[in-house]
Length: 264
Image 1: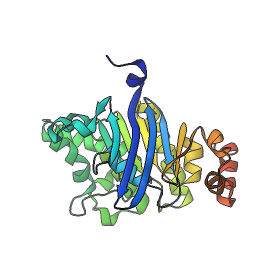
Image 2: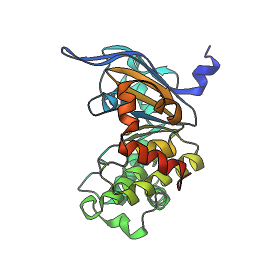
Image 3: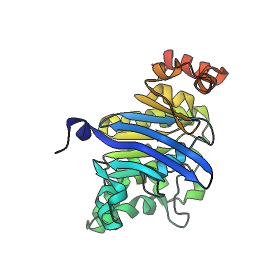
Image 4: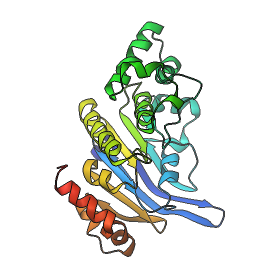
């Protein structure tokens, strides 16, 4: 029988080790994502946060350990058994990963066409609704990815990630490459949609302003392990050189000031 904690944890990572040859990427990494929260996985370049995201999505295997989605150990499931779980999640990849030969509307329609038996008119209606939900103008639906700005491509990727009305949303560096205005707008959108749709969100990011503004909890990776976890305030106060280097530099101090000032 499942415990109460297991029911509340949408993602559980237990004792994960990852090695590429002699290189150790993760050493006994543990984390949990609770239902309804926004969790940010942070750390310096090369700390293994994007690798961990791919492992949680089972796009690559772990060397040792266990990863569970919705209380199911994904390492034991076949691709056919994974399919129902994957329909409950949405993913925004770092560069949006839109199909360049398809319009924005066609990109957002694709998950609905692949995973539902809805008629074409209903699929198009739902896709247009998702496009509107992420703040894109109606006329953007007919444009190709190359005709969209970087910020519009991020929102388009988010619209596709939300196409199947997921319970769990994964975001890989959602604000990377955006100017401060565009990043702030995307932060606001993610926070609003998570609340309105009841989403659980796991976000990999190095954007200090984002993690202060929208994350309920933070897990920081470094030296192949979890260095700290908790709220932004709790993690920022951890007495570890890598943690202090991350949070106490000029960018970290500026991000915290913004969080405690105009964007509270």
